Image (cartoon, rainbow, N blue to C red):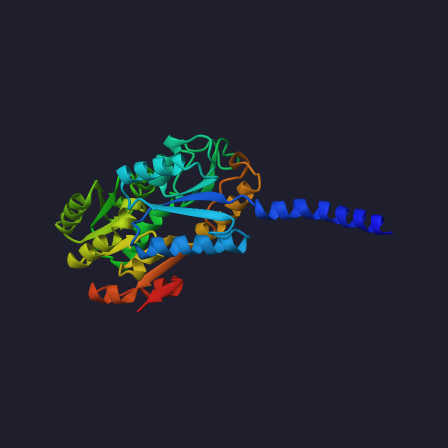
Length: 329
């Protein structure tokens, strides 16, 4: 009897030992995250926290079975290149790239590490993936917008400020090379709305200042701001310059209006960050980016800052107030 008891105990221990070993040897996964803003930007801090919380809900906890490495590029191409090279050298399991600038930088550094992009315009046209349905390669993710939306920007700013005669479109060529596709939608509409378009590329803060001053120098001027990581990073300056020169301006993202911009119309910018962790989870569990289709925005919102409208002496039409998803007072 004692011999049988000993064998039974030994057998039980033999089963238990490997289980203990597996629990102790759970591999910690590395996720590198390139965020388009600067590290002290409230928006960048918010998306980093949101991304981490969404991963927690899927069973991935930073410091336990996950190591999250955030790098902030501040809308700067040189900083993006340095950050991308640093992340790739760490050999993470997945890289999350926020913005075209971030994706372009990391795409040059690796063709093997899986990449999930967040808020990137025209990934097919820019050569990052072969198609939306079948990305191919090591990249998949979540796009930012349909380019036809720029025609709506032009209509909305004219509706808010009917006297507009000149509208400036500012963009950063490195951070937003897709700006020309926005222009393809806006340009044919401009004459029918009685406005002329001023297309002004800006490469740095000094050029940004001069560009907005030039737009203000035209009678009855207004401003449309391209959604790219450079303009997002410098949104505080853009909003303050628009206020100084009393320029009606429209932006792509809600947080511009929250920060004092006149109005915004575009996709819900938080949505891609809420959905991206599911793709990261799938890849960590063995899925290939090549087989995960590119996802497009599903929610769009119009936000109007009534305080800014009042400061500019503008009366928002009642029909536009009714259509707004949010009014800031």
